[in-house]
Image (tube, rainbow, N blue to C red; front, side):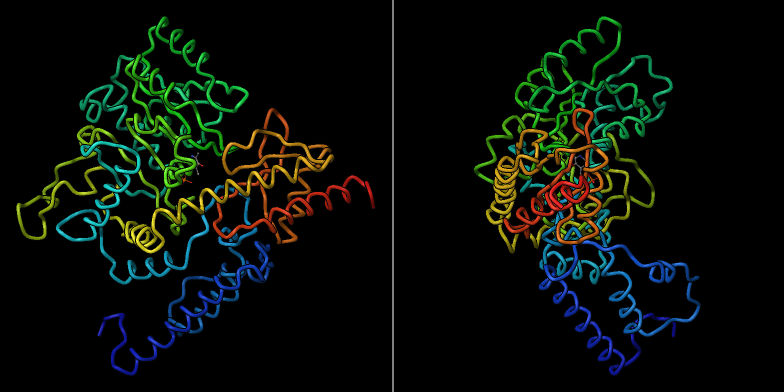
Length: 478
Ligand SMILES: *Cc1c(COP(=O)(O)O)cnc(C)c1O
């Protein structure tokens, strides 16, 4: 017998019991997260366990699970923990975890074909369409994350600008020197997308930021005019809704106007910010989103869906389809039978085999409802305001950027090195874990509040911790 399944009733029963223990361990983990450190470095002995060669003989599932509990679970980055505020990471939910288990059990390949998992993904597209005010002709796709979603958008924009022939001849043959525009606050994956698309990073014009840390539109206009005068072909404008450094939102209606004026593909990187549409209070801040040609965003950040669950939506589904669809004998479509239901998800991106990312997203929205997710998004912004007040009340702390959404950047009044060390000490202490970034040439402490489990006590702990380590490291007050 070569099946990897249990071979009889007794073996199935043993697996079932072990499976229930594993599930309970994860519930225990999630229920008691606060009692654990956010993060801790793995000891050398643990690290060395992962130098072992591929096992030839298998071991009991219980033994392997025990290794997971001892050597893997305690040493993850900790984004599920309420004190995690290091990077823009979602926290996940128990519901998402369970849905992921169902998806793994079903093991559907959601590249296409005539199956309801594809409809689940399409239903989420419809929800996103409605939420963003996109037309029925819009297409969309689950991808790993916004990095991939942005890349797909650049490819669709490139194809729209150059015509379908670019898919055959490549960019080498292209006479037009295409250029795209984004702000200095844009995520690094935008430049990477330009690189991957063959257009090159130099074809991305980085427009400086204004005092609100959003794109300086006057400078954008100047850059476009200069490029036109020099014979370049502006083809794409990429706005940011929720910048990774400070949470700034570009002036989307004005960017939409500029894009319209110059016939540019208007893409928005809304990696985490776009889902602020779920909050009635925040929604007006995203006005203009509905005018984008495409939006990239993640359900795994503010949407709290377990990793990974990125999404790209494209207003003109035909352009999107024509960027990726490739006829192949083994992917032949039929009117009925298993090969019906064309077009398929694989026609809208580079992946053929695809997991059922839609299911954990679908469960999350079905169980919590859009309002509750929206409320948790709004709450992280309230926490950011609360943290801002705490910072302003401390003379040793300096706010480094306006608090637009959920990201708070500040400094302890000391050198860059001291601020970096404060953050390292906080991470090692394990109660709250911020990160650093650079603003106006200075290293700052960054608290990105994305976690639905975060509370005021975590903001209090952050400020107390920064003051304590700051005083110790500068020799003040000790
Ligand atoms: C997180 C983020 C990205 C990258 O998204 P991934 O899901 O990590 O690939 C891009 N842009 C912004 C603004 C982000 O916050």
